[in-house]
Amino acid sequence: VRSTLAVDLAGVRLPTPVMIASGCFTSVKELSGLLDLRKVGGIVTRSITAEPDLGAPTPRMAESSSGLLTAIGLQNEGVESLVAELPALTRIGVPLFASVGGTTIEEFSRIAARLVALRAVTALELNLSCPDEHREGRPFASSPTRAAEVVAAVAGISRVAVFAKLPMDGADVVEVARQCVAAGAHGLTLINAVQGIAIDATSSHPKLTPGPGGLSGPAIKPIALLAVYRVAEVLPDTPIIGVGGISTTDDAVEFLLAGASAVQVGTAMFTNPSVPVDIAVGMGRHLVDYGVSSPGGLRALAHQQPVEA
Amino acid sequence: MAVEELMACGLGMCLTCVVPVSGPRGSGLVNARACVEGPVFNAGRIQWERWLGRAAVSEPSEDDAADARVVAQ
Image (cartoon, rainbow over all chains, first blue to last red):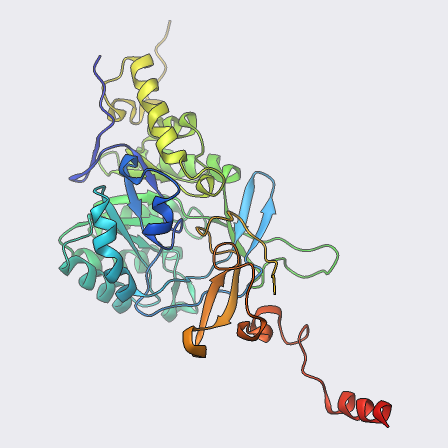
């Protein structure tokens, strides 16, 4: 069997199913010194807001068993800074997903309009874990209706595919996913970091300055896998990008089996920046070993009933 | 001076180790990453109160100043 690693998600063709998740780099120049970016399936930018944001004060991180708790806030240089970096990002030659943030629907729309007009981004990924100004800062994704309103506003003006990135906590992920797709999302990215807190037993204070943070890394893999599994069951035709605790080829394969079409790697990049390339190479070997012609051939196989012997 | 801040990656990717410093030409405020832009910073550029909090970096109070004068006498 001749295998290809390429996958298609809502008309977006990725050369491999292993992308770099949002929040893993600040400048392309620095990142390109750490791995061969031409060999990744796609790159997602840090979440971009309309204006530059300094994010949360430090300490911003705490270690946790098999996981990393962080509270960066939405630190980024603003949409105009990303616009300035777009030529360098597109020159890499792999699909570029812009992660769009915001605290109002208008902000999401404004950023999306600015980026889409430049015809440089392959797709938009909406960070629906952002605080909703009209609901006391609760995440948009904690309300299926509000999440869908953001999606509808952006999908209405976007010429490129729109992916809604959802967390597993806050509201029923299946319901939020369903409403986002009904509102026009072409695909879903599941999941964002899981809310958690670390407290210092000595000082009696939370370890992170903002208090709560987002848990990532291998600790959340089964949670992310369940999100993909459950959503794929209900929305079998919607492309899903699985993300959460993926650090090995087997992890990535499990997400495809659960129903994802592609995966993203985030926290694992911090210990091995070339992990998206390593996983893709391992995936190629896996496809050959199992006689499967493309990653799509593994999609959602875990949903099939085992064959009686 | 050299600073220490918690670091997840040490490669400039994760933004956990930022230190607030005054911007270029002394204006504004930027988050400099201790791992790649530091760890050595001009101490005068570091925004100490913002970084370590008011309690950790209190200005000398009037009482402290008075005490200093008493000692000086």
